[in-house]
Length: 180
Image 1 (cartoon, rainbow, N blue to C red):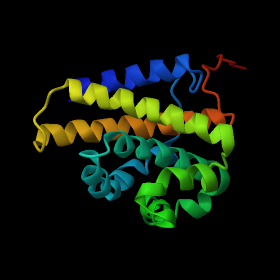
Image 2 (cartoon, rainbow, N blue to C red; image 1 turned 180 degrees about the vertical axis):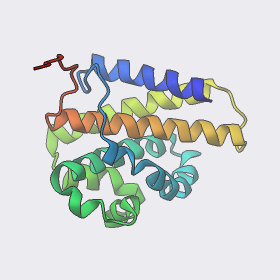
Image 3 (cartoon, one colour; image 1 turned 90 degrees about the vertical axis):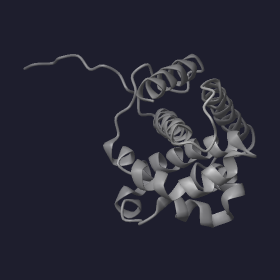
């Protein structure tokens, strides 16, 4: 599964670089990354339940969640770092079905064409990840299927963070050695 996760991350990263949504160099944001385990644990009951009927939404919501967490990190991390369950906080504002709209409207402050473009970008990423997952041809309901789904969610989380950090002006470039 580790090989699948690495290839999926590389593929989605290349795709987003071509769309100029992320930088060539993946960002490092340990504060946001540290929230992944708790968010994943809280999200899995909802995401897994919805996956059978709405796989693109189930995957895409995780990208939106990561974008929201990256925005929180940039705007008021001292406050949001203390929130026990960031996923539930986000979900409970308008419910699971409207999680994307809440994050676009209220957290990212995207409206009109900007919101539509972001919605399309996330949808395209989720569709791409879904196709990669289905190509594995794993029997649903197995431990292997669960691990693959979690790997997909983690990739979506990483890419959501990267997209949001770039959109806020954080650019990941290799720094020159400036030894004094």
